[in-house]
Image (cartoon, rainbow, N blue to C red; front, side):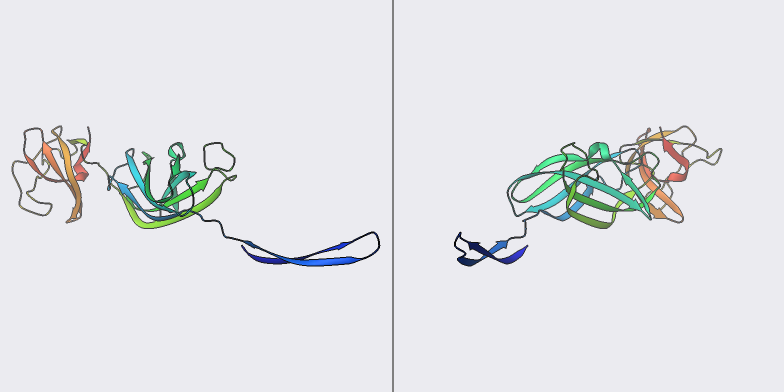
Length: 220
């Protein structure tokens, strides 16, 4: 981009010359930008699909882009290329979304999110080295990957004769009796870390609701 000046000179058959100077201005292309990104539901567990929302501003005319996304825990990236979605950005401000499936092997922890808008220069419908990155945004601590998701059915295990304590609040009063191996429930909320444990609010099969440590719960 910028203004460039050049001179054109001509000579006729009799050797006479003339010249003229010209200027041309090349404007910077108006590229879209990402103003924000968010993930829902959050937190989520390994193997679950989440929705990533991109808040986008496109100063130019509508254009197709691929929505790229990677999550990072330390130096380990996780991507989901099967869901790198092709969308058409409208002119101006808009929100576009894509699905991202958390790998079943994902470690538990808090992940950074890296999202991008990519021009599919080779028209093959996927993000690769032949494409052009139009915009990128990184959000720190954007996704918590935890053991369970809300709605998961869980089962008590490995408590032996002691049973699993149920509490009124994550760190609160016990609600006896305990739950024993094989009893089941549904995750309603969580986790909340307290006294060395991540605790989840569970609706048990007998209708009781309370908070219990995830150490003794598994998907059922």
